[in-house]
Image 1 (cartoon, helix red, strand yellow):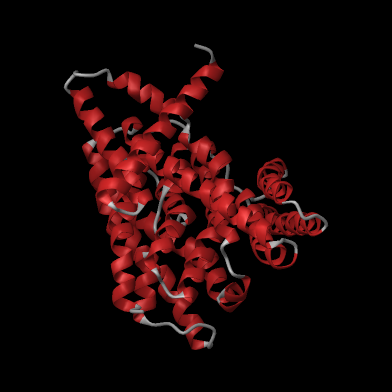
Image 2 (spheres, rainbow, N blue to C red; image 1 turned 180 degrees about the horizontal axis):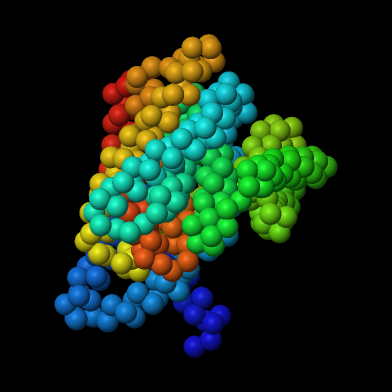
Amino acid sequence: MNETQGVFNAIAIVLSFAAVASYINHRYLQFPNTIALMAISLGLSLIIVLLGTANIIDRELIEGFVESLHFDKVLLHGMLAYLLFAGALTIDLQYLRGVLAQITAFATFSVALSGVIAGTIFWVIATSLGFEIEIIHGLLFGALIAPTDPVAVLGILKGARAPRTLQTTMAGESLFNDGVGVVIFLTLASVAFSGKEPALTELGKFLLLEAGGGAALGLGLGWITYRLMHSIDEYSVEVLLSLAVVSGGYALATALHMSGPIVVVIAGIIIGNQARSTAMSDITRRYLDNFWELLDDILNAVLFALVGLEVVAIQLDWQYAYTGILAIPVVLSARLISIAIPGAALHVIGLMPFQRKLLAALSWGGLRGGISIALALSLPTSPERDLLVTAAYIVVTFSVLVQGLTFGNLIKRFFPS
């Protein structure tokens, strides 16, 4: 079987599994679809692991198939661009302006602080359990687990009926903090696995090019696409233009060493607001919204099915797993502290009304998802990588299945309609 046929077969298997699992959930379970897909695929994966351990099936064959999917590359250099753009289209710029200060603080300061707190405590726990890792590896774990996952967050916000301001804050933070988190992660990874210690000035230039350059490129591409849409009235062409700005913009950002996520988010906000209000007819708006909503639902289904299946390729060492379980309260506490400090500061200077129920919602609703797993899987092979991948997977599983399932009830309790 040639490589092209192998890729097609992999796509066919994953899509078929996601479709059947979605049907089972819609017909019988009635859970949020992304959470149900991950639970079903996780359950199937654990059964495969148990049957493989008992030598009933060839686990190596299935493990090889899962590894051939290259989850980290598929997500970070493929699906993520379309998922982020679909989420950005739904952001209301009017509400975004009102919460811009807190989004900026949470997407920058909070991500860095959360990573330092979680990474340092994770390193203490790991070394106390006998793992010979350096503190840089602990901070690397903190960096990959600190950003909230926009796909997971936007997925639970759809059905949570949270107040519009809270929705915009959480969605905006999760859409923007990936750029900062990835830059920190890549910098720490270069230190941990290459031995290079970048100077502070080099780090500043890297961050400026990635984030600042990405924002400028996103503004430019978004404005150009808006002007092109404004000059015509043909929904099929305008939907195609939106696809082009995502695919081409992300690829161009990667080639220029800029942040692809920031590029597509900025472009998506421009098209979702300026272009939608002044450059589209009613029929174009309807087709654009329906197209991206459907694509978002399909990619979400595939993504969370992949997240659940990925457990087959993880080294299920019980000491690794125990470390991951201990990391859950660490990550939650780091999130709480990193949100509380800037939130209190913004409240004091009058930029943000801050209440305990808002702190609880932002902390518990800050889900981790496939991005954290993909970042961990992108690390070079090493004993430290196996520990970080396993710990990240356990934290993500808890985050999606437990936090994701209970967030709606928390919103109903704290923000009754």
